[in-house]
Image (tube, rainbow, N blue to C red):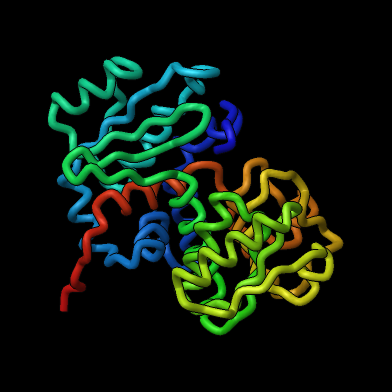
Length: 284
C-alpha cells in the first residue's frame, strides 16, 4: 500500500460528517451506504450490527514507524460508522495480544506493506487495498446511476485497480484496463474474466485514446496528475482512490461534484463492512 503522510489524513477527523454528506450529494449514498453497496448489504441492518462490534486499532512501529494520527483517524472513522472502536494502549505484538485477550471482535493494523482488518472470531482477513478498490468502484457505480452495460476505464492494475475491476465486472460493466505494465493488465483481465465469467474486459494501450471514449473512470494509479484538464470530457465521472491523487488540480476543478477521492475514509468503511458481511436479508 502507499504509505500515507500526516498531511494526507490530518483533515479527516473534524470533517467526517461533512464528507459523508458530500458523498451523499455526489452518489446518493453516505459513507456507510457506499460501504454497504460495495458489500451488497442493507445499510440499516449493517448499522445495527456494527453497534454490537468492538474493534481495536493497533499501532505498529515496524519499518518506518507509526504515521502520526493514523490509528486515531482509523478509530474515528469506525466510530463515525457506529462501531465501538478504540486505539490500543500498546503497540505491535503486545497490542494484538491485548485485543485478543480483551475480547475484541476485530482489530485493524498497518505496516509499510499492508493495512488489514482481522476478524478475531471468524479468522477472516480483509485487506485495505481490496476494500478501497471495491469501495471506489461502488461509488462510481452509484455516480453513474448504474454501471451495467456501460463502458468503464480502470487506470492502474495493482491490487486496488484489480479489486475495483472485479466489482465493476460483477455489476455488468464493460471494463477496459490500462496500465504502464501491459502484463499487469493482461493478468487482471484473466483473473476477473475467469472469476466473473465475462468477456467484456479489454485492454487499452494509450491513455488519451482510452479517455476519449470512456466517461466512467476508476483512477487507481499511484501517479499524480494522470488525468489533466485537457483530458476531461463532458459527463465524465471519476472515482480516484490513488494516492497521490491522479487527477490534476485543473481537472479536479472541472470535474467538480463528479469526482470522488479520499485517502482513507471509503477504504476503512468497506473494511468494517467486510468484517461482518455474512448475508443479510433485507427487512420487509
